[in-house]
Image 1 (cartoon, helix red, strand yellow):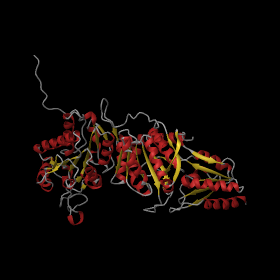
Image 2 (cartoon, helix red, strand yellow):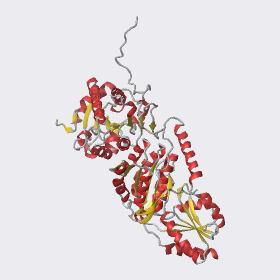
Image 3 (cartoon, helix red, strand yellow):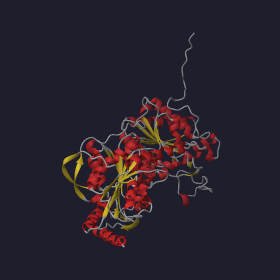
Image 4 (cartoon, helix red, strand yellow):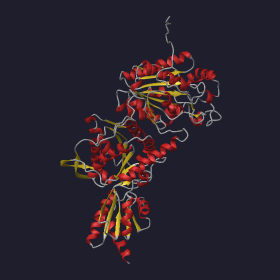
Length: 254
Length: 362
């Protein structure tokens, strides 16, 4: 007798069968999987080109089975712009951390959004430079301790964390701006939905889409994976409101 | 080896060097230009902004030189012909991107319309970036092909040649001109016919349709991986050095004093050399067209026969070091430098020639 089998869950086809180098509980591996699922669901793997950052996700080309370019630190959206302008019918995304996107690459971030480039920018905000040892990032919370702010981030000398969605929302051209949080199952599902919205708007030719994902870094939060997610929910989300800032090209008020 | 003579229009047109270079790029099939304003190269982005959209191309005024060179990287990664231009301080900013282009083995054309330096320097013509262009420029073990035009016609022709070479070897190629060449106008013949051919670009990022995913990267951290990659790059540079070193010479076979100069300075030196010969002095001219690869072998041959070499440059002595190395002490070497944005007159170089001629007679 033939048994009737339904696959209800499997590894996304766009995700390579490789063991990831990410630490236990790191948000990157989660977002890679969500991204691969989105690429599969939209059936765009063979016309998607990604740009990987300098940072923990520099090896994205090991894990995602689509064409991928590296970029110098912070220049990720400039490289993505070059690719998209040369091949406007391909789906182009950049994948960046907080150092890449909000420190060294802030100029590219703002100007790419301001031009309304028809690309999707995925911003992993985990408040630290994970790859180089957890140093202070532009998004490090006030009081948060890192090797380069050992007594905690002091606003008097290091300023306050930068809210990127809010900055980009002052510009006229972006089409979709959203912040989500990897703080539990509902947050993860919401993140996937946000990625779907962003890629769909790019596919429809609507223009710039930006998804900021508050993400756990257990290694440099010095917390367990579970507590790291709690930290994202209780601390990060408090300073970085989780919501849609721009929908269908229209700014959304609180 | 001399550059292949391009097919040209019969009618001549009157253009600035910067415009001639830009039009050359368009005729070479470049459809993507990314740049940032800086004097004295502003005619290039302005020309591209007007003419690229007319032929389905893309012009972006980037937010910085850093963004511009990396937009070039992105477009080139898809297999398209892409370029940027700038002037000395802006080229310094692009060096990181040029290093990445070299590491990723991506073809691209970068025009440097030099101005005085260091720092903000001046907006006057200079040849102060020879070291930067020919010895790598950015970090890491790499080379770029460097073409040095000395006329508006060559600004045009070398733009086309630069795209051919960049694609052939998968290397960033630099056109090293200066503000004088960029700003002056001359009648030129425009290139006619198809753009130079490019080998198939199977490495390009176009979407992994019907093939395994491609990746463009220079980060190679597995043991031995980077070393292997560097040897591969060096092999490519050796092939370029063997096949592409180009120069121009006049009366070099039979001279007591050889004047070695490049770009604008070579053009002025040519006049000085001819004037010296009219006075009965046995003077010749050696003008490297490719600054890297430096055409050293022929120069070594001439150095063995000549008594002295005069190196004339609009800097404090940069090609001078390559001439010294090539001549290996066979001839006595003199230097006339004009730094800080000064363009020498023919009479300046002629005076230097006459003074050296007197010395070597004794």
